[in-house]
Structure formats: C-alpha cells, structure tokens
Image 1 (tube, rainbow, N blue to C red):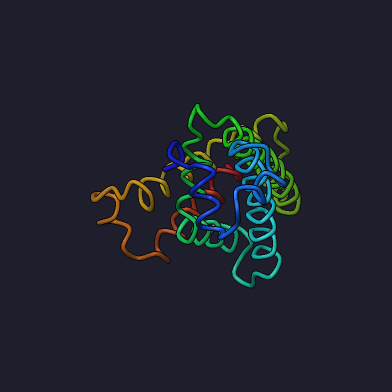
Image 2: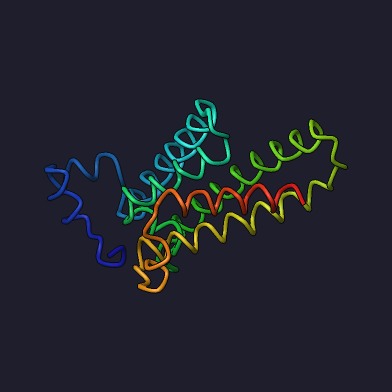
Length: 176
C-alpha cells in the first residue's frame, strides 16, 4: 500500500543501495512524482497508439488499452485514481492525465461532430462530458479490478462486453 511505501522497500525491490536512491531522489515523494509522471506519459502514449492503429474504432481501441493498463498496473492505477492525501504527487499526476486526455477527447469529438454534420457544442460542454465519462470509466475499473466488487464482477466477466459497453457510452455521451 502506498502509505507503507518506504525508501527501504523501493531500494530492496530495485536492488540498489540507499545511497544510489538518494543520488536520484530526495525522498519517496520525489520518487513517486517521477514514477507517476513517467507512467502518465506511458498511459497517454499507449492509448494514443492504440487509437491510431485501430481498425475497429479509436474509441474502442483506446478504451481497451486503458482497461489493459488498469489490469496490468493495479498498484499504480490505485495510486492515481485514489490519490491519497498523503501523496499530493498522485493527485497532481492524475489531474494532469485527466486534463490531457479530456482535451484530446474533446478535440476528437469536435472533429467527429463536424464530419457527421452535427451542430457544434461549446468547448466547456465537451470537456464536462469527457471528464464525467472518464470519471465513470475510472470508477468502474477501480471497482472491478482494484476493489474487486463481487456484484460488478458478476456482470463483467466478459472483458470484451465491458469494453464494448464503455465504448458505446463514450460515443453516445460525446455525440448526443
């Protein structure tokens, strides 16, 4: 758990001496800030790459990539999504990810609406929708993959169905 993260535990896992740790980081907060900043870049690059390489729709590919990131990195995702008060670095990193991703989603939705001849929506409205939908996805995945809510797990056994549901909600929410 994040509150129990110590420099000793980090050094033991990384197989480095304490002195080596302190050459790069002043304390565990500096380490966490660097780790999360790098992870945010990784998350964004992974989702963008998935969307660009997609043949089945960029929304679905990005959603599937985010689901996979949540699945394979539950500790870091827990840190980001639940950004504990003791670690403002986690809160700042998550807010940065949300700002960047909602801006990307809003731009994509704006372009999609224009191509389909739908009326423009104010930028604030697109951003509110993207933030709300992103929060929904974060909460869903956190409950499913971190908290392991049994009722949610019972209706979410089919990973592809979950991704399809989230994709449908993203598309409908951004185009309505």
